Length: 94
Image (cartoon, rainbow, N blue to C red; front, side, top):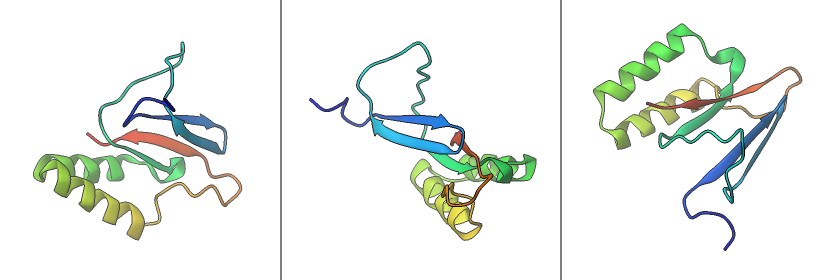
């Protein structure tokens, strides 16, 4: 078996992000049952967190994920790793 079905491991090391199938727990493993967005760390501020909180509480989980994806895409918030000095943050969407 190549990892645990439905689970991924996100490793962030400076500007580098690796997403691989989850195979085993280590001392630094943190679990989240919530969807996670990889965003540019510099874009995460209290206004974005307020927007996320509002969307998550006002919409069904499926609709909230669609709305958040639209927000992140239209605002260029997803971590792309193609610019020097950009750092990722894994943000649970709850």
